[in-house]
Length: 171
Image (tube, rainbow, N blue to C red; front, side):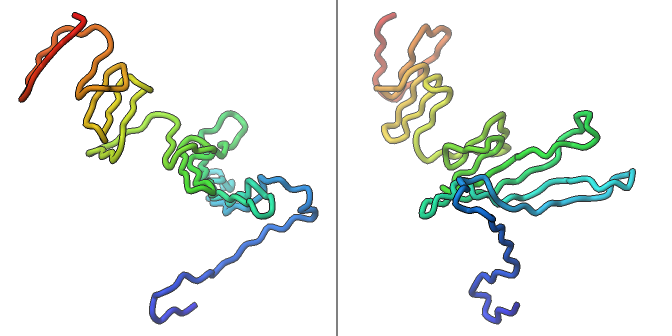
């Protein structure tokens, strides 16, 4: 394949999966690229795979996904089990640790961020444990805030530094 001007994407490999009876297909069909290597016993070991999945096969409403899987530890069957680790669904949602992401990025499990985390919008931690209302510059602890800082529950050992007025109620 030659592209003298580097201005396009060219399909160099097309892999099709056809069904003998597509009328009965509702989804869950697809194809995979499997990666294998020879282990120390000269056995072929499946390292991982990338699967293209048609998970809604209804004509006119088709949705596809890419799923990335790697082999986990040997659980006594003689081979490591292939486990889906990441999925990009047909709506552009990315799931890590989940095969059905419900948001643009959906992480099931712990996450570690080395560096800064920038959020352009509201931030909610555990529902209302901590809520940052970016559009109104408000922070709520235990509540969705109606004031610049609002805490629901008992507070002890607090120091307040303010450039303006400070008022308290209910103490």
